[in-house]
Structures are given as structure tokens and as C-alpha cells.
Length: 137
Image 1 (cartoon, rainbow, N blue to C red):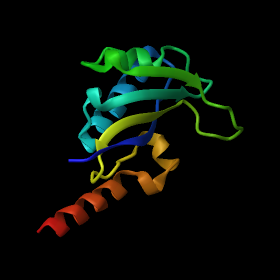
Image 2 (cartoon, one colour):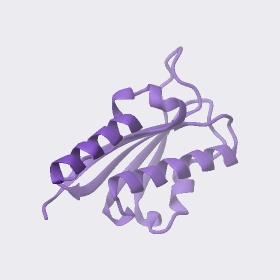
Image 3 (cartoon, rainbow, N blue to C red):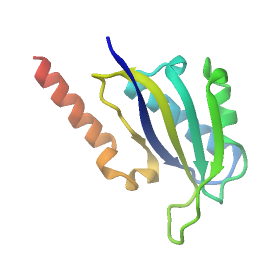
Image 4 (cartoon, rainbow, N blue to C red):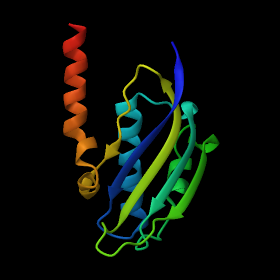
């Protein structure tokens, strides 16, 4: 099987600026990333997390580092550029990982962040999955 470095995008939002809310959202986001992309932490080269300026209770990378095998992934937290009228309390990531060349990349947009990329939302993922199943039959 041939492998290739791929970029995966994702985002989510939180209801409030608290450690608990951010931990829940980051955990959900990473769980979806791993599940939908069948991704193991050992295949991840790096993760850049960005947060909007209204989130400062905890670093998303600190949450990710506590997951099994994520402590050896290179991670960076940055503040997202502020643009008036943009989505608030948003956490984004850009991940570089090795995936099989033939595997589709599933970008993860959850909660209110699904509005950022409706073309990459869950419905698109479900349609892609159905097409893959149909072509295998």
C-alpha cells in the first residue's frame, strides 16, 4: 500500500470559555478525526491548533497531549486572526499525517463550525461513504 502525507482540516465551537467546554469540544473533534479517517496518532506528523481570541482557558494541544500516543506528536497553539463578524469561540486544526494514497480525506467540521465549510460537513462524508460502498458492490 502506498502512503502519502496529507493535510486534514477541522473546526468546532464551544458554548463558553472554560476548561471543561474546550476539553469536551477538542476531544469530540479528535475522536471524529481518528474515526472518520481511520487515523492513528503514530501517523500524524504535526498539528496546528488555532483558537479565536475569546478562548484562553486552556491550550487545545494540552488536551490532545493527554490522549494515548499523542504526546509524541508535534503540536502548536496559535490565536486565529480576528475578523469582525467571524465565528466566535472557534477551535480549528490543521493536521499533517500519512494516509494511504487511495484513502479519502475527511475534514471534520462540528457544531457551529460546520457553517465554515458546509461542503466538508458530515452530509458530504456520508455521501462519499455511500459512493464507496456502492462501487465496491
